Image (cartoon, rainbow over all chains, first blue to last red; front, side):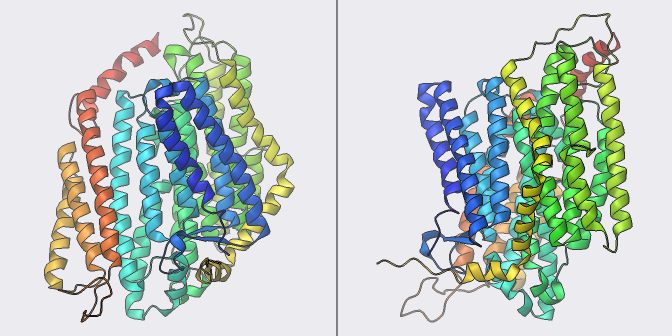
Length: 507
Length: 122
């Protein structure tokens, strides 16, 4: 029996986007109501899909009732269900912040683009077909172009242009890779490709490896992997805070694609080609981590710093993927939940500080004291501790789990040095910017910043509270991520579930 | 026929890559368009090149060509078309906001940042 659950999280935001488009005649408040209702409904739905995925292996939906290798399939397992949930939760917080700061008044169609963005993200997490993944990538990218440029401004246009161009080049490379793989394997269904990987003739193995590396470049652009991360700081630092917060999940789509496509295609069943991406991902992850930490040091503004912190968290996750064990994957999933939500919280908090400092904005210079400095300073302290991975908050927990999984890996010395050195550098940089922002105040001029809106403050506080909550509920959470990792490592289970899914018959 | 198609794809890709690396937005748009043309022909040829064969099953057909790449190319063309249209509008917006068509839009942004740094020193 074909399950309905994998298709609902894709349909809901699509309907939401269309509704938001039509309620435009009713004014902005109607659009806000539609977007908020749909996002809350999506959170509820993704909690339900996570429970469904936990109870029954892989849920497969055959689009148009075409059998697996011929039609397109949507596959729900615990890995994709977890990512759906974190996307929905993040979207809810970012939306509340956007509404409380009137970000959506700065231009047209914010709410429509927002729902279509969620449509593309959810589709990319659920699809089991390589070409369909390309289509959902394009959907989420096109919506993200609109959101990134929302509100306008010179620096935003410049950062947006770079972002659009590099992603268009990435799309072309994606199609080259997809075409090559189809030419050799004769299929685009990920499970079917994985199944056929062992039968690739030795003469064709080089071509498949080249296509796989081309795909890694594409996903590396999305995930901001060294040396393809240069677009990220410019694009993220200059867009509006709510959009930057939502984009904390965008880099994770690239990571998820590496795990889903490369991890499934080049598992143990692939014979000579098994695990060909792992070393590259591991080494580039370590390099990206150190460069991200240097970027945090060199950044001139708090938002730029937040962008480099997102980059460092992606790099840590790349290391987790490169280690390639169920335990490392479970640790990476925990760290992914933490880093996505905390990266977003850091962007929102940087925006609060920039508003409080008025004309000095988020630049790391000595400025007149802002109002509510003690409250904002406490928020900064919590966010910085959490995101650099110091005890007692969730970042520390995630990094300990990851380092624990790295024990016994042939490159464990390198992995330990990279992660610990990166954390140390980020810690020093965060301490320095904190003291610049809150201690080195000059009282020569008057502060021309705004007083904070209590609704915006409440959103940031609530988002930051998730970090201690993740520590308190670490037991059940890690049990969940371990279950998801165990299910993912069982690649035969995935392949069989997809290929043996029977079509629905009319009774 | 294969070598002719291969050369066409290669030349278009090479020209596309060269144009994408230019510093101004108009050659960049042309380069991305050429790249998408190259990838469309490439995708098409991945179903193996056939002449005069049917794509849909029929009793009279003597042989078949692979219909899937044709469907893929159709999707790719539509997406590339939409993206190019968006990019042209964005390039025009960048031209009017940054005051030049340089991809980095350097001079204008540098001017904008100058008065801010003066304010910092006070």
